[in-house]
Length: 197
Ligand SMILES: CC(C)(COP(=O)(O)OP(=O)(O)OC[C@H]1O[C@@H](n2cnc3c(N)ncnc32)[C@H](O)[C@@H]1OP(=O)(O)O)[C@@H](O)C(=O)NCCC(=O)NCCS
Image: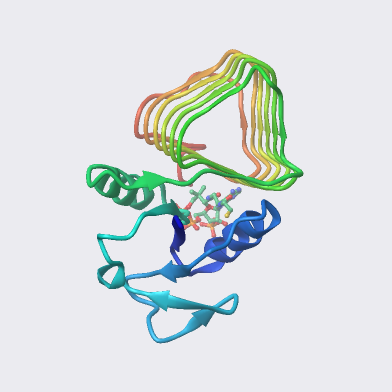
């Protein structure tokens, strides 16, 4: 039997748990470096050291912070542990989309034809990734954000809740877009939009 663990027992981990359950997956336990000696969703919370390396298992990395999720998922994959992908049955994914490993597509998220989603991304509730858009690795598209057609979003970006990126715009690496913002022009690496007041 292949065990499936959810790494991260916080609020996001709970959403992941219910998504994997609705996919018919059986979860063995949560893993967390800090929240030990508690239960979450009726499951034990273990530390990563509790996993027996001889067992076969996959992990879904349920960490909202892009940088931390990237670091953890990359480190475990280097140990040949595969990152589980979670796609809610009520997520809409057209057949011509490409979805990388370890992604989380929540209920109500929509991924349009010929969109390409990298690895380790979060597409949160009711987010829309329109046609021909490229989402780089370890991005977080928050609730109700809309990424226009043909957008290029590089790695580890946070697109805040309800934000809109107009079509054919290029967003650099490690960019943060505020909740509710409307992006009308390209944004460079490591920027925050709009600039902090
Ligand atoms: C834009 C953002 C990154 C700024 O974070 P920050 O640098 O910590 O900014 P602060 O919280 O210190 O706020 C600075 C000022 O900007 C305002 N502000 C913050 N976010 C704002 C937003 N999205 N829209 C408008 N104003 C905003 C604050 O009210 C504050 O104004 P003040 O100085 O007049 O009181 C953050 O607020 C944000 O929108 N993050 C996205 C959150 C999200 O959607 N997460 C996903 C959900 S799970």
